[in-house]
Image (cartoon, rainbow, N blue to C red):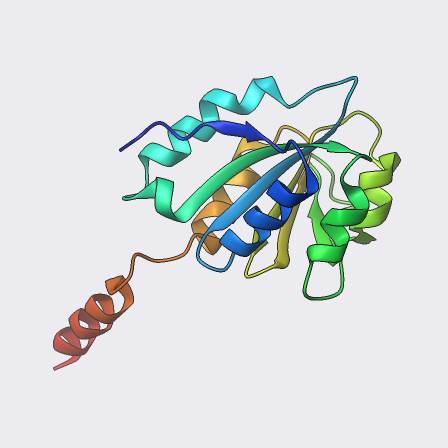
Length: 162
């Protein structure tokens, strides 16, 4: 397995390219202000996640993106409504609260890390805070299967039922 780098988005063309890649991959953006930079705390955790999945480099990408520099382009690349439940660490009262990515990308989150998961050009999950268990869970739930993997799993389940 290759080491999966955390690539910074440099321009809107590159952002569009990654949205196109989301048709076959799970893309996780670390959205941050230019003055705070990406979430360095979770960099080793991203690598650990990649070691858990076969062909991770073909199925999962971690990117960093400055906001509000790319906020408008990010939302314009989404296929569906930019509404998603957020996961807040150690907070029962706000869990499941509906928020727009626009509000989060505009800075309503303060300086907490914000992770946006994109699959098939849709926002599938959002994690607010350096919450490794929530990130690991979203990867487990949304990482695309390896081509043919689902067919093999279906065949195994059918044979077990007989």
